[in-house]
Length: 296
Image 1 (cartoon, rainbow, N blue to C red):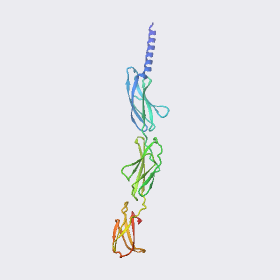
Image 2 (tube, rainbow, N blue to C red):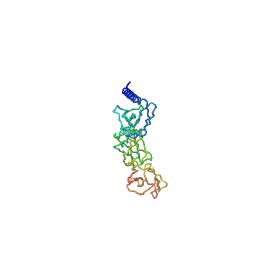
Image 3 (tube, one colour):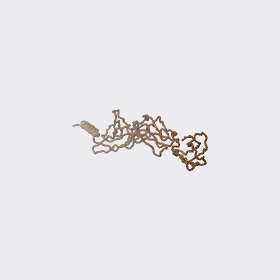
Image 4 (cartoon, rainbow, N blue to C red):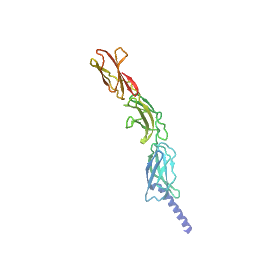
């Protein structure tokens, strides 16, 4: 066999061996792919090559390929990089992705490794609940709101948190759009904040409102009048527990509009003397709380 035919045969054999190497590389090279970080719009991955003796490919660059689990959209492919980590960005919040890594040789030959990782982005920051309203009564307040708009998050509300200066800890409600604050004091000013809580415990900013509880339809009830002697009376009544009231005590003879005694009291019991013997008297007690009068 002449020399030129030997050269041609050797070249053909070399080409055949090179082709065989490239064909075997995808099957005999493995990689450890790890999701090392995430936010609402990116996932971070790093990988370690686990070459076996049969893997002859010399990778110079790598790239990631990702697609959403919930649809058949076109996979995302990153630019190639010589590093063993990459950030997949511009992703959707609270979404699962299937991610693979590929190695690329200097001559442009790509190997997609069989290792796949399913990773989820974090929840985006939810919107605060709009249209906050408070409907107060003397000792409670009904707080209502609308569901928050879906903007840059999944829209999956796990609960709402209600903050108020009526308590040191926030109240929580599952998914109802209302909550009743209780054990409030009449004629007192309170604030209330409502925040949306979404997946991963991500909490929104709050909608805030101040309100004042109303005046109760109450008066100094339980009025009792007892005679101690022929010129004295003991007058008592139930105290108002939601303010520090002033009481106005008025005493007049029965059937008369003229008061024989009028005085202020700061406790729910007084002794009255200097009255006429064997005389019927009419007694009224009025309370003033924060400038509002309530008459018994």
